[in-house]
Image (cartoon, one colour):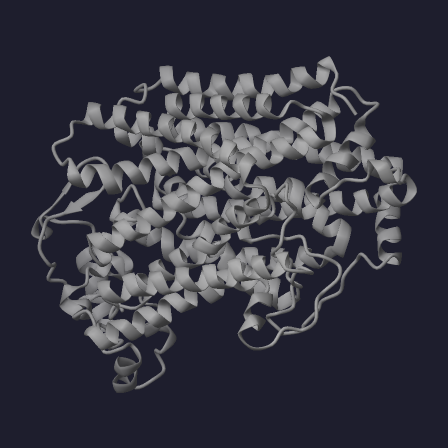
Length: 617
């Protein structure tokens, strides 16, 4: 199971072409001379490259390694996650994108200052930085470790080469280079997975036979309508819980929001969400089919006991090297496919981290920073985060079993951040104190349930939802704890320990709901935000629309008494006519004392005097 010269050449070609794309955009156009070009690609991207970049940012590593292993072990139940993609992408397209895009912001956390205050913005920013710094080191180290265990590919050569190449094209070419390398790397991922499926299916008699044998062995799952949230995978867990997981990624995560904001228009940003839906379904289908082919192939060509993989994340690599070993070049193509996933994810992390650091932490304290110096500092931040990623990869190599918790942190933090944005966007009565306390409560809940589940798993048999990972780390957990579960469940837990068995697919829903409930309670106890103090552009009127059939008196009470106007079509028509924008999201005007600095509208100090009653609620 060793690489040939052709395999190494294909892998090297991936790195060379990725670097070439970065150099091209560093030397073309305006040569990344402005912050807007470097961080937002001049807000001039079409919907298709943005859609493919959205797909590559978080889906890649999970789809390539985690999902086939999940299907191999537990059957096709996980395939029902595709049902969550529809709402998980429609809601961002029609709720989050219009609000973010019309505010003309650069960092999604600028929204938190416009809606609440600077303290909430900084809290959200620091939480995101912590999440991504932990994540990017693991996502660089874990696939290299798995590849080294299976093929003998030098571990640190792979880590250093990938980290430096990714840092190079991200620092030189900015977001435009990141998006176009994502497009190229997505095509490589599709090619690698298709090669494995086609060759593997031919070896066992075709895809029809694969499906027939998998069905006979009980690997083709039916619809499990059990509503129990402690069951690891059911239709409701995947189709409903998966919506919240998708929203935490595609709705409010800076890496994705930045791509929406790089689109040339709001319509193009929405179209990117529509376009990523079929792409997500294709990726899910390819990964599930890979798992079925792997299962049937293993039944007919079993490995010797000494060759069996030591951990679940090596299953796919052992299968690929066995199937493709007599076809020079194809193992190299799959390795290029695997590392394309890592490159696209890491480059997105570098760019988004540089953006939030620059816009949320540096610019507010250096208001007189010139455009040239701001651009240079943004590039240095991207370079610094690239080097930090290599350092985090080294730290990951020393963590051992603690690596399990490091991987899980990414999934734990996404839910509370989603709850924070929903609290601000859907509940006008929420105040800054409620937002901060709600975020802290959501994070506490996330770490209590997540880490408690990990510790409970290390004390004996892992929990049914499988939050304990192999010591080598499992890439699937990069999104939400883990997808791979043990086959033997412990005795049914009781009391508070029951929460440790909560399906990981409900983590985002559980944690975001905690933020909203605690945030609303604290806001009501400390005094809800007055309607006149809320910028109407930061609110999406979801409650008035859901409660439109109730009498005005009850609507006002259910909306917490803070800015839930009566549903008056006259008001709505007047708002649309006067603003020219539906939903009352008016563009900035002279009366609002805002100025456009190329990156977004910076609101002058002082409380705004916006009356929510005059919007199209």
